[in-house]
Length: 89
Image (tube, rainbow, N blue to C red; front, side):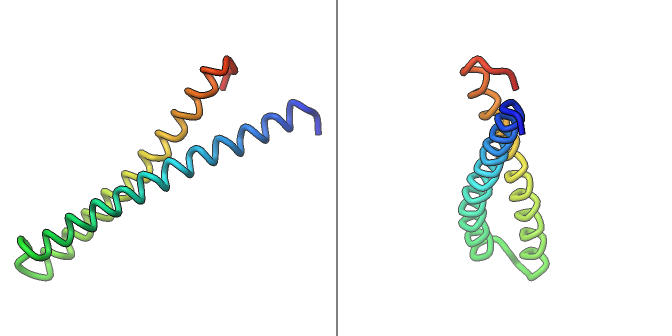
């Protein structure tokens, strides 16, 4: 394997780590926030099981969107760090 191919493989691994870290961070933060909101909603606002199931589905959607946003943010931060180093993406 040539040196340039090894460098590309290393950068691809680092990029994946940035994306995974961003997705994990956003996912965990959204989980903590949604857990608190869900508990409050269950105790104060929900009138039936249907209300709880609807709020659960909304929470799943929000968490999935947060994970995707975290991945996009991680990729953006990786590209930003490469640009600051003066290396193209």
